[in-house]
Image 1 (cartoon, rainbow, N blue to C red):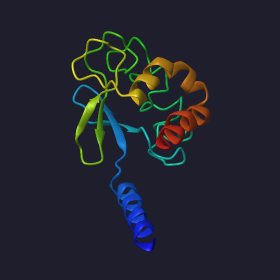
Image 2 (image 1 turned 90 degrees about the vertical axis):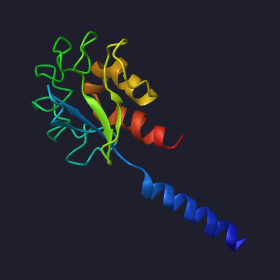
Image 3 (image 1 turned 60 degrees about the vertical axis):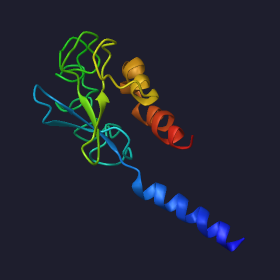
Image 4 (image 1 turned 180 degrees about the horizontal axis):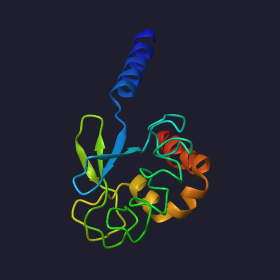
Length: 144
């Protein structure tokens, strides 16, 4: 019995340690950091932190600011632009490309993950209530 509990603890601990966060980068050459997609909403790098550079609706590096390059539905650098070919890219902590965060259905290598799809489909509602959507998309998804 103790061996089973120890084994389960090791499996749980090792999967927690190896989990990686997802980040988005934008701009013409993808060098502008736009935040962490699945970090804590209190993390300064999180897109869910309404007081941080990447979650504030007033920041130039926030996808939630609909008056900047990354939040304006009509800007070619925005993930919300349905015809953009320069949408932000998603990478993990190791720098491995995970797809583009984009509303453009025909962009090659678009992320079709459930998480990315929810962000794209609900971005206007999300921007109005980051805390609620953080719980729904990050906390609740991690329990699945």
